[in-house]
Length: 131
Image (cartoon, rainbow, N blue to C red; front, side, top):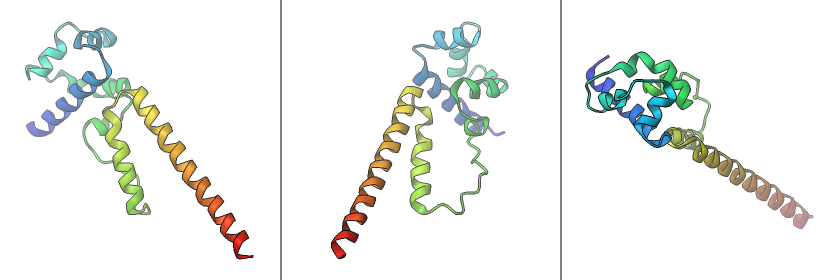
């Protein structure tokens, strides 16, 4: 792994820590890490986070692949361009706190269901008028 990739992983982990925890110390306590561990990560003095990727992925509810920026291998070839765009936008929410991400998912679900219901009602209304 090259230095640039490791730097990207470090930045992603630090971003997750910043978004999910009040402080570095709170994160260290939650994971049982020694004091100043995150400070050493921030200053580039340690890359011990690389050995902790499975544990960090669990803590942040992401896959190790996501931490490593490895694209998901699921076949998306049958997805439309719109579906891929929505999926890409949703995946960008990974760094959001879980409560916000849940609210976002619920909002998206509600919005789509409303549009589906409206479209169905319009279709039914249109059929009635054409009779």
